[in-house]
Structures are given as structure tokens and as C-alpha cells.
Length: 162
Image 1 (cartoon, rainbow, N blue to C red):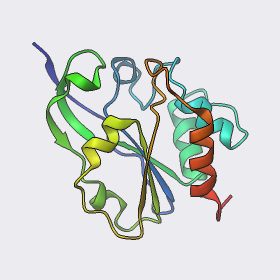
Image 2: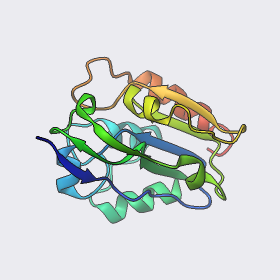
Image 3: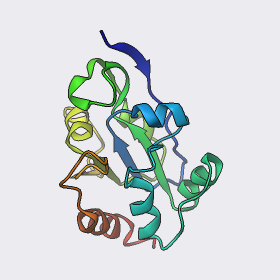
């Protein structure tokens, strides 16, 4: 039997330009208390590396980095029953209201961190000015991760503000 668990609140600011949307926090992230808490996950290294910065050491530093770089974070599933960290085992999912989150922000691009995040977002009616991109998951379990794909998507999303 899988336990029903809650995800994290979104990290979003009015000036956020890009929303990076995961599927649901891993067991290690939930234990850490923040997004992408598994040290083997390539998310923070990829994102911070794009901006030429070191990964912040703590949650407050990560939040400040996100604010400064105009990035919002959330997951497409806000609560669910899940076995371990397996996206395929997600049941009884509460889907995130992404359209409501980005209303009143500067978000123009949603980068989905993996196919599951993209699948749970599908069917959501986002404003027509918002572009959605599905990227390979940064999870350590994904052998098809592509730093180049992430870099290209980030470069395009931040082209006018970098």
C-alpha cells in the first residue's frame, strides 16, 4: 500500500519569467524539505551552471537564487499516493493549477522536468503567450538526461533577460 503524501508549495515571484515544473518530490527531496533534494539529481547543477554560479548550500540560498534569476519552481502533482519516488506509481493525483499560479507573474515559459511533469500538465489551459517545453528529467534514474537540451531551452527562455 502506498501512502498519500503532500508536495511542496510553489516558489514563485511576480518577476518570475520561467516556471520549472517537476512531477512530484522524491523521497529524498521530501526528507530534505525542498525541491530536488537528492544530491545525485542533476537539477541544481544544471540550472546554476547555466548561470555560471555554484549551487547554493541551503534552502534559503536556493530560494534567493531562484528569485534573483527569475525562476519559479513547482510540481504538476501537489498530492498523491506514491510508492518510493516512482512517477509511474502515482495514483489519486491532485494536479497543480499552473494557470492560477502564473497569473500575475511574468512567466512566459514552462519547462517540464520530464515526461511525467508534462503529462500531468497536459490539458491545462495556460495563457496563449506561455510556451511549454518538455525536457529530459534531471533524475539520477534517467539515463537519457541531456545537459545540452536543458542549456538550449534555458538559453531560449532567458534570451531577452540574461
